[in-house]
Image (cartoon, rainbow, N blue to C red; front, side):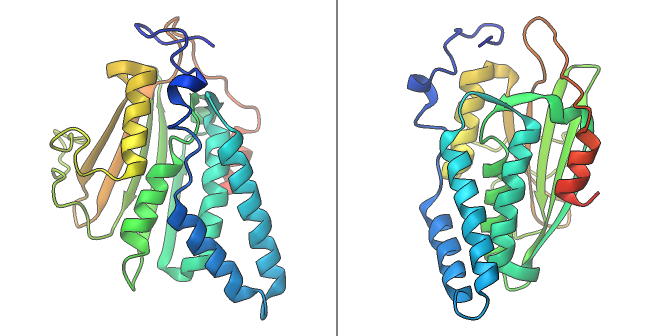
Amino acid sequence: MAGHRGLPEDALHPSALGALEGQIRPHFLFNVLTTIQTYVRDRPALAEELIGSLAQYVRTSLSRGGLVLLAEELALVHVYLGLERARLGGRLRTIFDIDPVALGVSIPSLLVQPLVENAVVHAAARRSEGATLRLAVRYRRARNRLVVMVADDGPGLVRAPPASPGRPFAQTPGGSGGLGLGLRNVRLRLRVVYGDAGKLRLLRRCGGGTIAAITLPAGSEKGERPVLLRDGADRAALWFGR
């Protein structure tokens, strides 16, 4: 597996990142199983569907490693959000803005899902009115960079700096201080795989809420560009209703 500039070729070896990849938060599994239990008697067909989705989520999360296409990562996000919608109902609202070209970019597995989970847990699940999550993905051709943003209109992070036109992705103070397990995991893996070229930044959303943004190289040190998936736009439409 090709490394990025300045990184050892075995940077993605399971012995280096195995403990960081494939983590599933215990409280998420507990909540989903509790939701399924409530549907077993009155809505057995839905309960069966949720069990299948949960099995797919667990199997995919535990079996993936190394680099995957962003398209594959978003498929996992789609399954995760389906499970959470069953639990939260109308309290979880989503908006997606996916650049089809970005679907062909390779990224470390389980990099986007923790950002989405963080927004669900801290914005939608904690409030009776829930929250709206916006997932935006862009491929910046000029700099060959991938940008992934997850924004919510929840209560927001007290320590995160506000967004501004001049500083759209301001760093949270104190490095990883104050980050939950999932976001610390993401930040550490970005550092291991991409060095200083991969970043996770948090900021307060204007009007309330939080924005989590990942930026990383979209190709190898040889300047390779992502492969445009022939059915990329169709996949985006299938998963996210575009």
